[in-house]
Image (tube, rainbow, N blue to C red; front, side, top):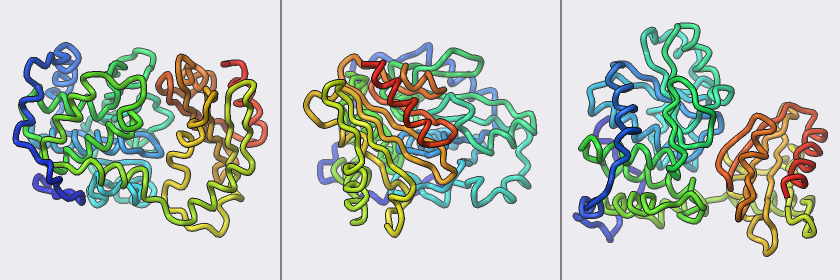
Length: 353
């Protein structure tokens, strides 16, 4: 598994000077040392991420997997669901077991004594079945994350990072472990997804240094971007039209709320991530400060993605419903009925502005 190849072809812009980008770079020593101390205490580790895995969760998992293998650790990646097909360029799907399809196999594995290391998530309610399995075996649990969360035991969180993949990138260099082309693809994909392609307010000089350094491993940034943002099936346009037809556009209170009922998906071939990126698209309207994409789940619950600009804090808004995220990008989940949950979220959006 150490020499796994990436589906992304090497770029013609390949540079052999990736280390030059780190001249004078100041490592986040105290934070990285705390993670290393955790790793040293455990020889067997399960990596997982949040339900509804995204590029940063997957990219940071894949990067951490190979880092731990280089440190001679025994490692599994076990997620709540299979890798979405449009993200399988970032992480080999056969490397990831999931509790949706492989629950019997996972339940029979000898996982006693493993550390469950949750990447890109500190909300235990969003981990899934593997947490229940590990708690039953009295496994230790820890998180590595960059979201704004309350402090807690075994939470290795630093909100100054733009992405968890950025943390993993820095950990590689701090430990002096070489980054492969495949790992560079995963980490770069995680960073551009969580920064809106280096646009969001959490993008820092360190983020750009990380991105520039990863380009030095011969990755094709354009192909990675297109795989994440520009690989939608044709039926996605039909879904987008249905969503826009029902969207609430309130220019007075400066928000757009898109309500996605499960009936809108009927007779459409949409792949694994049918609404990915739409919440960003509807924010791209002059004068709008908040966009919300509220999706009805098959069970009638509400899953909501929030985006904002300027100083409008959607993480605080999401927190009122047990969600979280960043100041300008957050999410939440509310048990149904869907119609009632929509009203609650819209009321909080109007209060926020």
